[in-house]
Length: 429
Image 1 (spheres, one colour):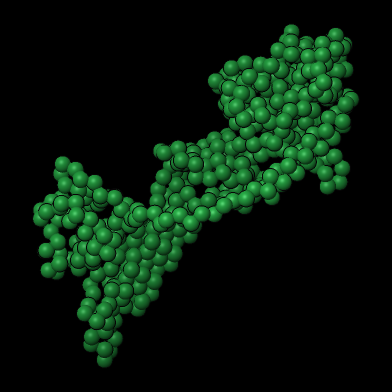
Image 2 (cartoon, rainbow, N blue to C red; image 1 turned 60 degrees about the vertical axis):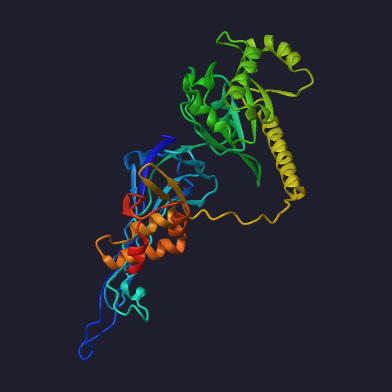
């Protein structure tokens, strides 16, 4: 359960109220309609202690609360309550339709708003002016955003254990940490990644991940390869566990070469991660026959003959991993300190409030602002239509239509609303 698809729906904004003050001895009370409340957002938050997305499989639709409607006496509607969705730290969030990366929630308590609540509509008291003292117009609440998103967990660990099935990765994790992975003498005992904390001594530790065994063709998805390979991408370095005993009839050197090919085919950057070579099962008689040949293959490169079962050589391996991590982190800090970011003053970007496209039927206006103006307009209210015209004119839409050659009677579409272009008629109102 490390992937999920969910639908998220933010709350709609509440409608503004059309109301007039009605009290004894106040025969002509002015407008007093309150604003609608804002709709709640849908928020994802990274949470420690979670490791799967199973809860979202059972609840694939997450909905925030709508904003309350405004009422008389200038009482605004209440804002809708946010819908907070907890996900494991290490979750990648994408828009399912566009594949756009929305967030990479790597840190605990990190949050992202995946659907924003609609803005509450203004009540009629907001439209009162010296020339418009009794406005019978109010805005509708803006609909909240709705989208479908995909969630994918990528394990967060300092060091990843990679190797072919039965190489002894789970046994090594159990030996070096308090993790209790399932261990058995058959391939694919581990069907999901396991995490453990390796403590070198007090205040010196790192997170070690047991990545399920990879096989030839893993980069194409063979043996659940895609599900396993993505968990390696976040690690800072790898410990490559090789079965030196070759009890399954495999060749340790060919296994090493093939697995690195699989890593490179999936993501070339994985081949650039630092690797420490652990020659496991040195306690078995068959391993002695392969040791000299494998050491000769690696030449001057340091390898660590170990036995995850007995613990021989494991302490030296983990200490080397910790030292390598410290070196990597120190280098990263130095690079961050010496990197100089030159801030250049860029000219302001042209207005992107809307776009105007001419079609065979007329003109189509797109953009968040004109769309919001249309959605929040009561099309049955004549005063509201006049207000919409003024909004569009202030945005520059009316002038843009005139420059584009729009003439009286042309059809203009904004979102699902179509109207006839007639600036003279609108201005006369």
